[in-house]
Length: 525
Image (cartoon, rainbow, N blue to C red):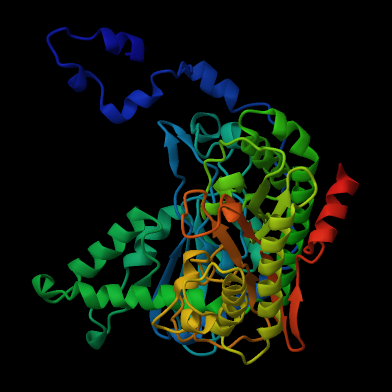
């Protein structure tokens, strides 16, 4: 019976009984189901290219990363999902992006592997590709043959709908990881699970990435427990948390391949900022000029990279005092400042994160320049403080000392700068409430699950990539400041690579000083 026939149905039956709810999303489909159609669809296609690709440049680096995480957890099964597609509306999905830990350990980016899972299986010493502790297998759903119904009927994974997917052999050749069909995943996850003291295997899982994998692991743990009712769920959660922590800390130091990806992301982001300046004349004439700014950058992100690294902040006037302004629906007016915080995510999924605050008309006013220069001086102080061996938190301290001094000099601080900088003061943070730096990489706020002693209290080391981004935010409704300061927000953010010789500003191609910003804007307009 066809869908349309079923809809007519037995008038005595309730509608829900005639057609399951989950099937109704396909009601618009009018795909033929005849045997003649199926046979014709499976015929007369050019043969697929059977040649195998070369090994990816990232493969050796990803193998070293797997070996490092393997060394942390010998004898335990480690499960790292890519995650499923995420539904935007009914049967349409967002563009797929794998979980960052999965991308880091495999080297896969873009949208090749929805639902994929990387399993590091414990092995005897001296075998496997995980440094002797684990062998790696990547489970995913490969390209369906053109003689299958999936080829034209599966809107999520059929080549007719979403384009070609790599074969198991292609991924294995590119990445040097053993591959297996996703159909074998359940056995791979659950086999041998049980109490370690009687020969079972302990599992660690990157949780909250794929609900189906979470349920599979939880069920395996429950079914193999000697006393399920006494199962210590908090202890199991701790196992998984420790894996997430270790994977996050593994990204604190970038290898040379990652640094090159960061350079590419920064270069594309710089090009995006140039497009913003070119779009300013049109932005000024549009009732939602911030959207004009946002879309100019987004176009470059899609042209040169994979996507945005995060939602662009395009904040004009008083909106620039809202730290995470992403509505971007305001006007862009002559005489005001425009703060743009944006980053391009490369095809390898590494993102830049840069902020510039520019005068809409191309020239800073006296008060705008004063505030901008204070923020720039704070950023320069942070750069000067950033050296190998210095604690990460001290970069923030150096920037705050400059800003507190300027606020005192302008008569804005209700106390002295020294008192404000004390632990019992902090009044200056009213106008600079966020941190000055965060790690950067596969995530815009990378390494977020790392322990405090390795992040905020950790020492700067060659290979770290982080931001320096002080700001001052004087809201229009802030009665604690002189009227001339109100409605002005300034942030300057650069992406920094720490080397043995000191910090390297990866985003130095974008002008930073007021005069250089004005000259740069004039050259583009």
